[in-house]
Length: 267
Image 1 (cartoon, rainbow, N blue to C red):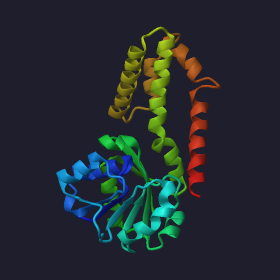
Image 2 (image 1 turned 45 degrees about the vertical axis):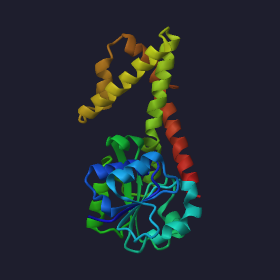
Image 3 (image 1 turned 90 degrees about the horizontal axis):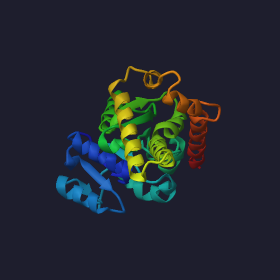
Image 4 (image 1 turned 180 degrees about the vertical axis):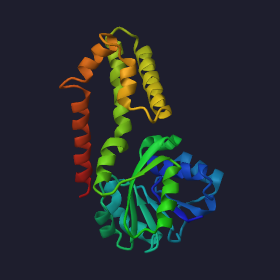
């Protein structure tokens, strides 16, 4: 099994670490470099026995670059010893292009830009990925197996599409959580107690998401139509949500704003 080094083990790096361990990646082949060690990470290291912040690091076969994008410049010199020209670097740094990363880490010749999302923590995420052409078929398959420990994996044909992936699915869980907040607030305004409104909103989104998951061949539009009786209550609500100032134009603007910010982060 390939030697895996995680450089940064925050929420997303930690999700990938948990996924690798669940999938049976040998702990002896895992090294974690994380300056801010949480009690949970420390306990995980004790339980599984992977190396946590060792004094010396052997260059990795696969290295996950999971630090904050804004930290890349100051962290680059400390990261370099964990890599060599044969290391496949998987970057989950939002907005940081391949050119941007290799300019700061010139030793890197093989790189995958990837963007997972937070449901990866429970194995229900989706990751968009783009590889440099320097990866072999075997290396790409190994990276896909690693990413698949967090959920679904899709490969895009152009690097710039990773910023669009970031804007849709990378940031997307926050949009859904905000929708739960908004739906609960609507319930409160309709007279429901706040705790009941929130419970109804959460359960509705959880159930609708599970229905999408269990019926992958059914378009979302069909599932929507199945709930909507002509002239009924749902149709009345959708008249607002699907209007000229409704959810689609609002979500389009939101995705565009996230895409713009991802490109700004490229620096």
